[in-house]
Length: 85
Image (cartoon, rainbow, N blue to C red; front, top):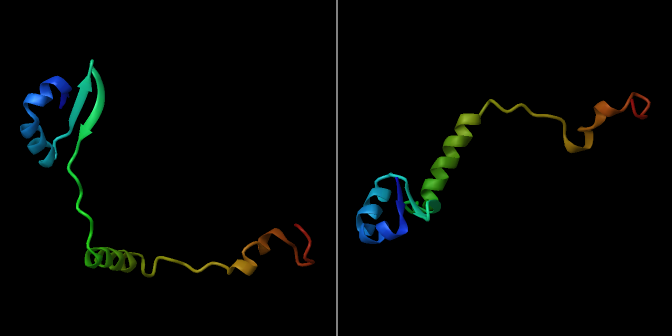
């Protein structure tokens, strides 16, 4: 929903409620979009973050294949004699 700043002044409470409900409210000045009203996202608690991380770790378990360690990660660039291939 696009609405001018002037019109929004009279409807601010209603616009805030709509934004909280998920509607996108864009305020305009002289027809140009200048501000978006959006609900503030609550910060995650440490327990919620831990749960999300645990779910992620479970989802990638077994999908990751180990690669070469850092000391050998560029071995494919060199021949058996140690010179660039």
